[in-house]
Image 1 (cartoon, one colour):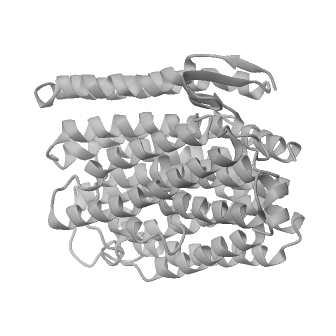
Image 2 (tube, helix red, strand yellow):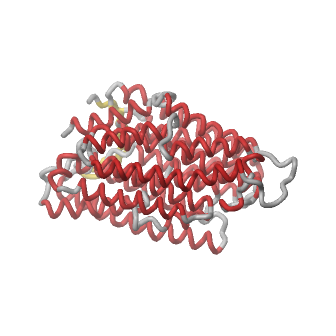
Image 3 (cartoon, one colour):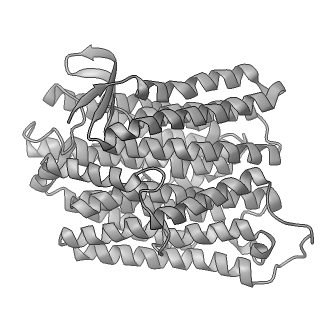
Length: 497
């Protein structure tokens, strides 16, 4: 593949770092200007990212080296199809999350709003660094920046529960970071390089026992943020964070960074040939399948809406890892595409949870009876996204799950087709009652006759993400070329075998 030296990946990272400084200097006294920096940076970031898409679709790789540290190791950005997919997703969703956040924090008159938007900007810079990282060291550095920048957002409310949730988040994720750093150093000592390569670069670089050990600890390290069981417990606890932060955690940055790291390890560090040789692919697929089923069962037991959504996220992240680990063309394509489709659907669901809270201060599913008739746009968007997560056409979740199912058959592993079907039934079981009760049950308490939707700065973003979820289910290349990027990435990975 042709490689082009370009500063654009660096600019995509830097634009929100500059915005973060402007947000701090502007402060609480000029809130409109502060929010202007947030929106402007999100638009500029998306413009820079989207400008790289034609090059990547043309089969080119964009590369930029910040500094060479030692032979074979540098801080380097390298934009391939998979990184481009994640970069487009994160930058597009941040625009909508920024608008929604303004409506949320002003609607609740939240404290420390400047700190909130500052850390949001840092998180998105770190996410771009993760998306465009050219090697394990660069990925690790931005991965840890994301960890630290997210902590003040998780603990934002500064209640005892929020502080505990933030500390648990740090304990889990910083411990995982140490594990990833150890594995990174170990791999460099074996190979003299850390650069990602489609199809992997560790084949023939160590004994079977050594490579198996490295694979296990890397999956455990990245699996913490990907919330693979039993490393998941921090995620439901972190739901104490403000709802836009939960949306950031689940759809844009943290857990998506974790699953992105898992797929980098599976497809760009070890690769299909080595994983088949070591017989690790099937073990990981079963490990992920266990998480898929158990997290779905946990979701059924949750009355708190955000906790139910959290376990639904754990379920879908495991589906992505399971698909990638099956190592067939369609399972890899479906797994990558599901990162994007799940991003739009899940951010819609969390946006709805936040809109409900701002308008009614209700957090539990048992309190939502009849609310759909008072907030029809909000619950209509929820219905669309929930149907998509369950794999119902014509929402985009159907496309990704269809390819995952075909991929399971390609890999001659019918058991994982049944895992997907059971998962879809569980999705219906824990989402359908919410929709039915909201629209068809009578409210348990009198409602204000003038009671209606949340502020439009919240309703418009959730409507847009719901509509995009529908459009991507009919035209999977609409707007972002997601399907082309996913299929090209799968082709490169398997072509490098």
